[in-house]
Structure formats: structure tokens, C-alpha cells
Image (cartoon, rainbow, N blue to C red; front, side):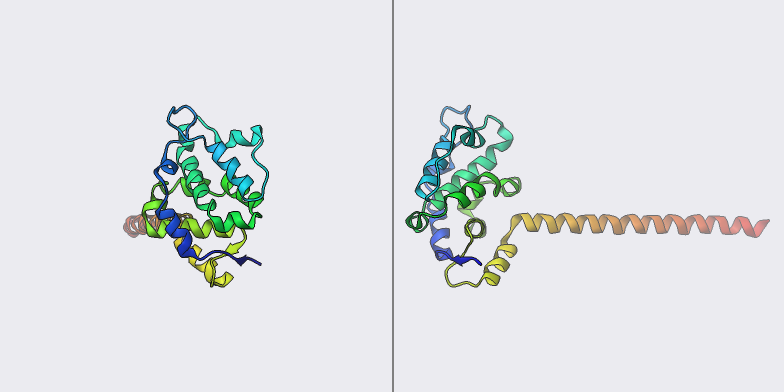
Length: 196
């Protein structure tokens, strides 16, 4: 059962105040890049977990530009999770490690990282996603309300529903075309039978 977390407004405000350093490049081959593995390692320690091992750090170091959005989103989420509310409890390190390593991949493929700072709905989505990953719900909300609100805001869920709708529409169009082709074929064949 999820535990009460901080108020959602605290987290969305923190995201709106994200320093420009947390929007910087993170790819290893960029001389101006933030060293994401160091940021994550420090965060995990502050949250009561173990710092990254050299092998664990490699996940947060990449020269692959296809991972740029994912790693930038990890940097923004690291800023969010470095809030005093989480640090003071000193118990979220392992859950944060899993979330930062695995929980943002799909989202980063859909939404540009800067949106999680500039757009109010995306800020709320990221804040709620972080809380959920840590086994928390926003202060004053039930588990059901928190889950419903996250589902409503979820970019990944919206993308899934849109893809499902597109597939259903394409299937409906395909069936209509097949039915029309079958009707025409039957209509063309009918006069031929009548002449014989």
C-alpha cells in the first residue's frame, strides 16, 4: 500500500524552478555535458542508497544520441528527487535507482525533456510518476485518486490509446474496402449468370 508523500504542488513547483544546469547536455562526448552518473550516484547516496558502482554508472553514460532525451529526463528527475522531503527520509535510494534506470525510457521517447519543466501537465505527470515509483501518493490523496490522475496525465497511456484507436480505424477501413470489393464482385458476376 502506498504511503503518503509530499504535496504534488511542492514537486510541480520544484520542477518549474529547475536550474538550467539540469537541462544541459548529458552525452559523454559533449565537453559541456553534465556528468549524469555522478549526479545520480550522489542522489542515490542522499536518498539512503548505495552510490553507483563503475558498472552501474555506465548505464548513465552514453555517447549514443538516441538516448539523449532519456538521459536528459533522468537528469530532470534527479533534480526533482533531490528535494529535502525525500532526502530527509533517507529511504528511497533503491527505488530511485530502479526508476531512474528503467522508468523513464518509454516516456522520453514520446515527450521532449524540457516539457517536464515548461508544461504544467507534464510537470504533474513526472511528479506523480516519481511518487508512484517510490511507493508514494501525493499528500491528501487516496491511492485510487492518485492512480486515476496519473493515468489521465500519462503520455505513454495516451500514446497507447491513440495507437489502439488508429489500429481499430484502419481495421474498420480495411473491412469496409473488402466488403465493397465483395459487393462489386457479386454485382459484376450477377449479370453474367443471367445471360447464360
